[in-house]
Amino acid sequence: MTTIEGSVALVTGGQRGLGRAFVHGLLSRGAAKVYATARRTVESNDPRIVPLTLDITDPDAVEAVAAQAGDVGIVVNNAGALFPGSLLKADMADVVATFETNVFGALRVARAFAPILAANGGGALVDIHSALSWGAGAAAYGASKAALWSLTNSLRIELSGQHTQVVGVHLGFADTDMVKAMKVDKLSPEQVADAVLHGVEKGESEVLVDEVSRRMKAALAGPVEGLTVTIGR
Ligand SMILES: NC(=O)c1ccc[n+]([C@@H]2O[C@H](COP(=O)([O-])OP(=O)(O)OC[C@H]3O[C@@H](n4cnc5c(N)ncnc54)[C@H](OP(=O)(O)O)[C@@H]3O)[C@@H](O)[C@H]2O)c1
Image (cartoon, rainbow, N blue to C red; front, side):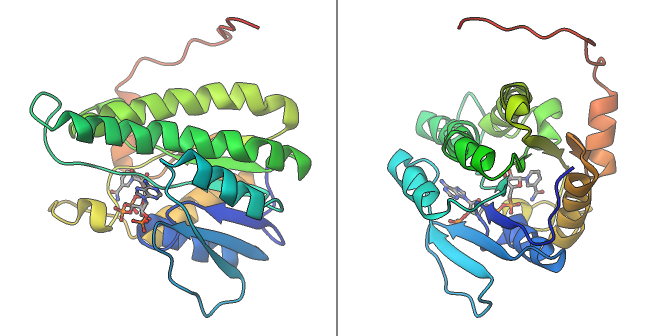
């Protein structure tokens, strides 16, 4: 359970799409300050929004942002990329870029901010997955989101000792640039942000935002209760 009222948050990809809705959702729930990152930042008229330049595929940039945002208690790992094509035919550079962004980029942010969250009392790490973590498809995107889902589950175990709430978010379609070409029913970004932030405040570890993700999860075999594998030091 994480209190948003009075908190300081950081949202990657926080200047458009779902990220922008997270920034405004956090503020409407009483956050005191929200760092909104983008690769090309735009200034905000709202003094509570602090724009920061960040490409999450750049390790030095992630470290630089963490050095500027040591007061953060909630991190929303929202930035993500979808390159069109198929796994077999897409340019291999796009496959690598998908994993660099959706998996390694999100992990870089988690690693950089884990000590900051610990220093600020534990807080919350929110990772934005997809219904395709379970449904697969969309070239490397589904595979990358499956990897991110697994990574989130591992981070939840590793961060439990410092009392960080780790929230995995699954959704089908929201009305943003990422899926603008798709003619399907979509939630508004504000609906997604509201459902996720409600889950954060309730202490949830997983938020299934829509019927698409609920049906995808229901189609899987259930988790194996009590089975945690720890390897190495
Ligand atoms: N929309 C959907 O239907 C849907 C469904 C399931 C999951 N999701 C997930 O929701 C998250 C937000 O997506 P969206 O729908 O808002 O997509 P979007 O409109 O395409 O926006 C993508 C966001 O990710 C940021 N980003 C991309 N690559 C980045 C990088 N290398 N470094 C830093 N930031 C980067 C972008 O920031 P810039 O401003 O710098 O470009 C932008 O804010 C993603 O993780 C996506 O996979 C979306």
